[in-house]
Amino acid sequence: MTFAMLEDTGGNLMQMARRQERRCLAATCRAGPRAPRPGGFRYDRDMTDPRYPIGAFAPPPAFTPELRREYIDQIAAVPARLRAAVDGLTEGYLDHPYRDEGWTVAQVVHHVADSHINAYVRFKLAVTEDNPPVKAYNEALWAGLPDASATNVRGSLDLLTSLHGRWVTFLRSLDAGQFSRTYHHSAMGPVTLDHALALYAWHGRHHTAHITALRERMGW
Image 1 (cartoon, rainbow, N blue to C red):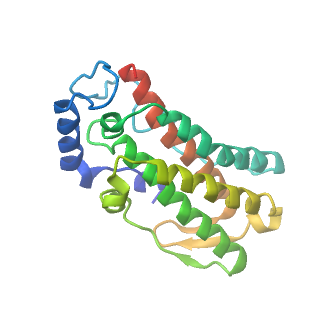
Image 2: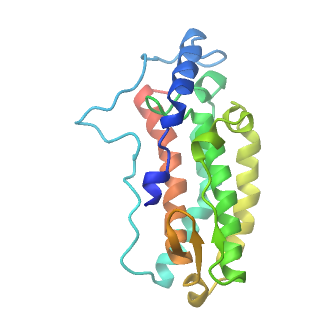
């Protein structure tokens, strides 16, 4: 099973997303600027799939020190880029799904925080233990919890700033041998830290693009 199959299925959130969109439309994006708001965005065959605005994750054929540095730099940039992506969005906008039957903008932000907390711990476990087991978590159910569906995203943005500061310092201390170490994911099997590094570098850009692409489509 690939990460893309686990990621953002949104199937369990269909009714929630529709309710949230109706609330947002009824309130005319309360407290927000008067932007045009069509009833919903629907994927057209001639358009980029809104689930994967930068494409699905694809690991590189080989890892080099230069590529690792590039991935670490991308991870380092996530907090500032995500903060910029939601800058100026008020409650009604943050409560709007980034696509039909998808998570709200706020849920996307909270999900990145949840996911990267797990990633940080997995990296630490892999470096200090021999192929430690790590458990998958139900992203859809996590996204439906009150703290992960609230429209106030400041806490998650601040958390990401602190978390990534620690994570990037740790990543930059690792050598090639340590990046070859693994953890055993309950759904994906053995995962090298090289693979995980590429995955989470993509993951931050992937979800940031969900928000920036939505703003571009909606004229926000």
